Length: 294
Length: 274
Image (cartoon, rainbow over the protein chains, first blue to last red):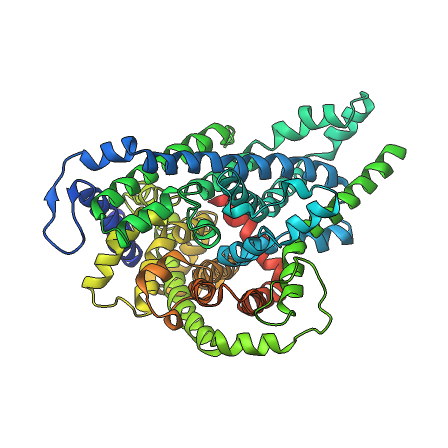
């Protein structure tokens, strides 16, 4: 009798999940299925859609412009992910000992600012800093490097790295603080023991700090890699993918294809590829860095 | 001892450099905003005659009052509904042990890293067919769905740690599941829900892609979407653009500075769990 009541009550619990599931199915799962469906058709968004098989996917991988966008997203990983994580590690390891000081508390707030402001604002601000009369060129001139000054976002060879710098600026603070929070959980006795054994700062970093931060590093890498692959706001504002196609990324290409060039099928095929790419990158990182003990 | 002190100094210097690197863009933005409208100043150059009026001009040009109202309305649409719906789901999956909870949970988790660009195209047609294109609902309803994986994930993480005895004793007192949820668990979940509210506020306020695709009129968008339109319109007038950008940033900055502790810990935890 009691078990029956229990069982009925458990099934009733589904009513609590229903609203959340409804929102999720209608506005995420359904459009996701539609993206897959659209990707198999040729459609201008207005007329009748024509079956197109895997043609759209073939174009994504063979059209040099489309494939270049995917490659650009992969290159952005260096700036969005590698730079903030490596620099963040170095910074966090250096400031670990003064993490509780008043300066560090102020710094915590300050270096978090880029996480709070809209990416659009970061894009506008850095477009100005990287422009031909902007602060970056002013600084370069001040140290005698007039020779390299240029409109960084308008130059074919520097547009993509310049977009990357903006991303690095946005993500560095988050990575530093996440890693610092992880370091504060390491048992200080480990460091004391290492010091007594005569280990230097480098040895300490590689033998104690780095292995203990497995989970935090995993989180930083996942968050930043996803940010690089799915970048949109910063590129839209700072370069629109230009000059030419030099800084085009899949997110922006999908937007142009679907809403300017009316190639809904092709846009959807690229969207599927992007989604698969993001999940294919995020899952293994999560799995590799997961805490084995839990 | 000596090395410890040296390390402390290196740390302090590094912190200052990092803070300068973070703040420099804002300083440049601010200084540029004070130059006469329509000029092309250098990146960091204090003007001879600071034009404080630029902020007033930008306030009018950007129609700040309307923008603020629009963003607030969108946040008021997204955050409360998301909180209630996600708390209920998190409670059922994490605490009630409903049958099939693993499956439901995994289904939500799979949506965690989904890039919004992946579904933006059908979302446009979906929202159009619902007849809400170019209204704030076009941003509100899809955002609730898109934030649902994280929200459910976050709330479930809270509810799995709630002791079973708590519910047992309420049940003995004759509480129904519905009463148990509202009278016992919702009040206890306040720390988790308030952090989630902060994150959802921030992500809604800063949402750009949905705003520019689904709503044409900048005055019906989020702050971020409006800023994009402002750049398109005033992009050539650098001082005015800088002043406008700063104004549009101000509300988020104020909220951040007031709730900074909660913000930082919510965002750190948010990315750790995500």
